[in-house]
Amino acid sequence: MAIKRLKRIAEPLVLPDGLEALPVPLLLYRKSDNSLVPNPEFITVFGVHSPARILSARALGLAQERPVHPSAFETPGRQEGRVLENDRGERISVDLRVSAYGKPSDQTWLVMFEDTGPRVDLQNQLVNQHLELQKSYEQLRSLQQALIQSAKLASLGELATGVAHELNQPLQAIMGFSQELKYVEKLSPVGSEYVDDIVSASKKMAEIIKSLRTFARDSGQELQATSVAHAIEESSRLLRHTFLQAGVTLELDVESDLPLTRANPIQLEQVFVNLLSNAKDALESSGVAAPKVSIEARNTAEGILVRVTDNGCGMPPEVRDRIFDPFFTTKPVGKGTGLGLSITHGILARAGARISVNSHPGAGTEFTILFQIDRSQTEGETA
Ligand SMILES: Nc1ncnc2c1ncn2[C@@H]1O[C@H](COP(=O)(O)OP(=O)(O)OP(=O)(O)O)[C@@H](O)[C@H]1O
Ligand SMILES: [Mg+2]
Image (cartoon, rainbow, N blue to C red; front, side, top):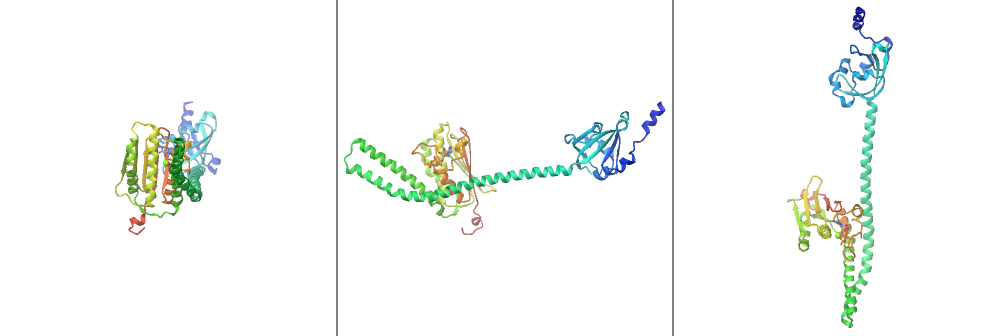
């Protein structure tokens, strides 16, 4: 009996001819002495000349990738998503099919391999293509938003020119006649009050008409090499007094030697006046303890980056999504026309600059503008 067992252990594991010739990569595995015998196809496909490599510690090191380990050879059935390491240390994705070989007491298994690399490559390609598609879709969506915005502004521009022209003359007449009325007629106190109301309402209308005209004129304004820094400083100077009165701190952090951009200088000031006025209004209505607006301007690889930040009331998404729409305002009648930001958007679009907003209720608001650098100037040519 003892002699018989010794003989059994010494018997080498060999592949029967039929399996040897099969054009499928396979191994025979015997547990008792860890024998592992590949067929020639296995060696051709996977480049593993020494099957012992499969048992090596290096293969175990790939545990997270579900490496092929002999214990896998003792589990009959299909096993997907395994990793095999070839003699060059390259990782190959494989699926295994394991079946018992011979008598159960022999503890020997036949393991067939399928290289799933091409399938995995295809899957990865598909995933990448899907991501690319998603990116293109998002770009298309933001482009569409920008187009909608500029279409709205363009049609509003045409309308504005007509309306401003038609309304201005009768309005001047109303203002003139109502002011005259106070002097020509002896009015009762109530009548006089009404006339004052008519005059102040007419003035507000005149303001709106003025904004509309500026808006409509925008397209005709000439672009030139313009200093963003100067526009920020001028607009801040204009509003410094109002800020002081409102108890709002205004902080400027403008990098020196900022390059120039191509814009209309007067309109660019208007952009910052609009943004600063809005920030001041947001701070006044929020009642925050230390109201502050900061403007930061930096020269970056993408262009001139300007951030206007306030710690005011912020905006809910339904307001944030509409702020660039003409006539959209949340301010009381008479306080806001709702044209400030649509004019701002139009001016920036013509200067090739992009504006975006980040705002949350109670957390303040940040407007970011990215201006293009006027290369013709930096290269010393006349703009
Ligand atoms: N910094 C800000 N914080 C909170 N809300 C803001 C801010 N800036 C703009 N908004 C919101 O966007 C709306 C539209 O702004 P926009 O400047 O176009 O018009 P307006 O300020 O209401 O009126 P106008 O500028 O014509 O006097 C505002 O009514 C306000 O609700
Ligand atoms: Mg405004």
